[in-house]
Length: 115
Image 1 (tube, rainbow, N blue to C red):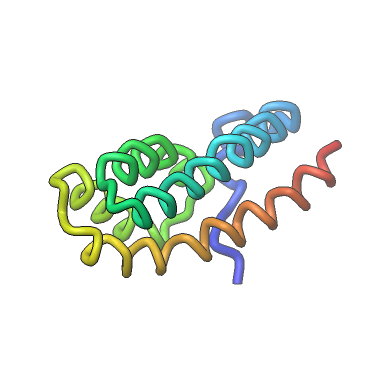
Image 2 (tube, rainbow, N blue to C red):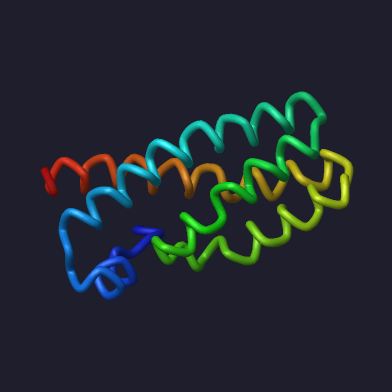
């Protein structure tokens, strides 16, 4: 199942392939390290690290219309901002991380098709 769409990017760029390519590159280069930092923050019991990194990638997720995890991402951001216990953050991270990772993997393939 695909958890993202390029339709929004096509619409706002008027189907500008160069723009879409750059946005895919930005997604991959930003979201990958941030996802790793979110996982590390959870492992280190560092809700601030989780917050900073989920906040950092939130707009990228919107550009790619990752609507099926939007509520979980917002909840994770809110709970991490409030320094909720990691035990309450971890199940959310466990739900969204595989979806974000599979999207990154798919976008790497999409990127190759744009080159």
